Length: 145
Image (cartoon, rainbow, N blue to C red; front, side, top):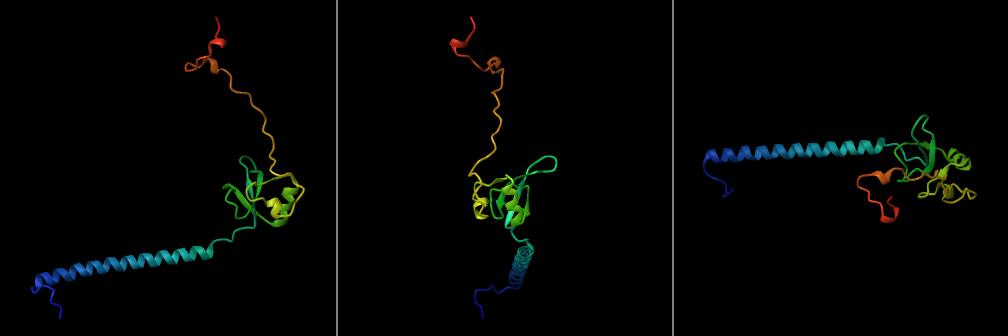
């Protein structure tokens, strides 16, 4: 039969236990991999479809809409909701900013929107009081005598 196995009973029994333990480990791994594949497939089937259009929502009271994106745009933030084609067109026509990455205005055939414009942010003057900072050294021409 197999000549490479030991002749004595205690070593044969040890080998049998060792192989039984390995079979148990292999069976447990097979079960875990099958469970993972089942869960992955179940998640794939239950995942909602990607919407055609999304609107990115702002923060604060009422979470106002900020920007329109294509549904598969990876630049959309985490705060968003799906919208239909008509609502996306209406929002863009009403002045909502289109995403400059996925260009929903172009995809929705809205040619009259200004390209890449964003509302101007108010200019803030630089913070005052830096001259008195202990780590700041003013140039000699600006020092008081």
